[in-house]
Amino acid sequence: MNDYPRFDLPISPPTRVTGWAGNSATLGAGLELPVFYPATGEQISVLAEDDAASVDQAVKAARHAFDKGPWPGLPTADRIAVLERCGQIIRENADELARLECVATGLLLRELRERHMARAAYNFRFFADFISQRAGERYDQTPGYLTTVAREPVGVAALIAPWNAPVALATMKISAALAFGNTCVLKPSEQTPLALARLVALLQEVLPEGVLNLVNGRGPVTGAALVAHPDVDLISFTGGTETGRSIMSAAGQRLVPCTMELGGKSANIIFASADYERALDGALLGIFSNNGQQCLAGSRILVERPIFDDFVGRFIERAQRIRVGDPTLSETELGPLASHSHMMRVLNFVETARADGGSLLTGGARRDDLGEGYFVTPTAVSVPSNTARTAQDEIFGPFATFLPFDTTDEAAAIANDTQFGLVSYVWSDHLPTVMTMTEQLRSGIVWVNTPMMRELRAPFGGYKNSGVGREGGAACEAFYTEEKTVTLPKTPPPLRRLGETGG
Ligand code: NDP
Image 1 (tube, rainbow, N blue to C red):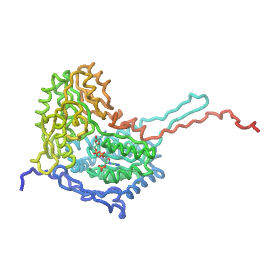
Image 2 (image 1 turned 30 degrees about the horizontal axis):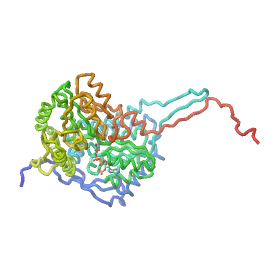
Image 3 (image 1 turned 90 degrees about the vertical axis):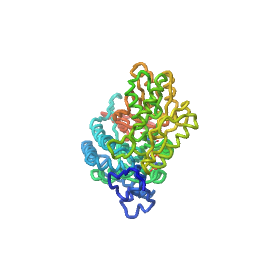
Image 4 (image 1 turned 90 degrees about the horizontal axis):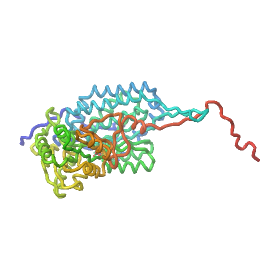
């Protein structure tokens, strides 16, 4: 017997989870995939994989609902009412959904309840509000003619979500696709299907048949079949850059529009002119929240040289006091990583940092005292230059890389010297420094003196390999609708009589 602490499951998860295959006795006889509780490493459920035949049926259901069903043509007021009901369902079931999300992802239960589920509900509320305010366009510049521009739903949307914040990220896609009248097929990550499977079942109760469909399984099997399906009209993807590349290539063959929310290696730039305590808080939150697994993590911490040693020292002191452990306890600050293989990948970056001339500042080890869970100590390294692999590769864990800088130009140059361009964080109370940095930084988002503050009306997405397209109010409207221009004469125009007098 060992004396590891016990991390009990906060909910009894279903023993078997199905996507579309659950709708038919003849489907879903394919592979069954294990689902693990990251806090203990124990298998808690199995997932029935949807193969190509099953994906075909799910897409056909969405196609039929789009071509023949009421959803695309529903009056806006009725669609708003359904979206609001969806948000309400999430609020009513937030506790159960948070618990299911917790046991598949290892994310902190408190955060899931207070932030992720609240955001998920708000996503529906936001798009309900958004469509209530939209107007069409009308032009009459050409004398005698009237031109109108209408926005119409595109069709069947394939929505592919990652494992690091499944419900919060997938609901942004579902709510936007539905708000603009599309029908959907959602594919969650096969590692973290539990809360989304439950959520889809709940939402299906208030949506017309076929409007929202779920397929489960591995990316290269279920995901690839979905992306290649000829009845899919648009694809919204959040995940890794390499996967995004392969999906966009497949979509390119059929000229299907895509949005790609991809990886990041965001710089958290701390000037000596910053409010020191807030910057320190922001640096810690930027890399250790969401168990370190977030695309927008401030994973490269650039500190102005005069305060570098002191700042790193204070960061290490705080990082070593972060409470790692049971994700269901309200006092826990860092839970387990999402999978065993991901934990090993994160830990291997310690050796990578050393091989590139860097040194380990703190952490860098598995928390063996916590049993078989995928717990990693909050980790930080310093590296000799921005070319080190830990300064370039997305690690996607509680792993910070420190670098000093001397001037504003140098800070911007280091921040921009990466294949990514999702977020940049700037900490300074000196306005000219802030203005110079916001102009020079090559990223889709710049957060000044604040960690992670997402405004849903504003576009969210990245430059360079961090993505293609944006999510957010108007950005989603542009993606999830086709524009139709209609021109008509106000009175019958004169005849042009082509061919009337010819031989
Ligand atoms: P992956 O790219 O591995 O997977 C994302 C999703 O795509 C999963 O559902 C996966 O399925 C699926 N998938 C994998 N291969 C294919 C394929 N060939 N065809 C269709 N679907 C496929 O990313 P992760 O799940 O590992 O998520 C982490 C990544 O997501 C990080 O790089 C992170 O930066 C990025 N991310 C970006 C965000 C942004 O907004 N920019 C937000 C959050 C995360 P399965 O897992 O079942 O194999």
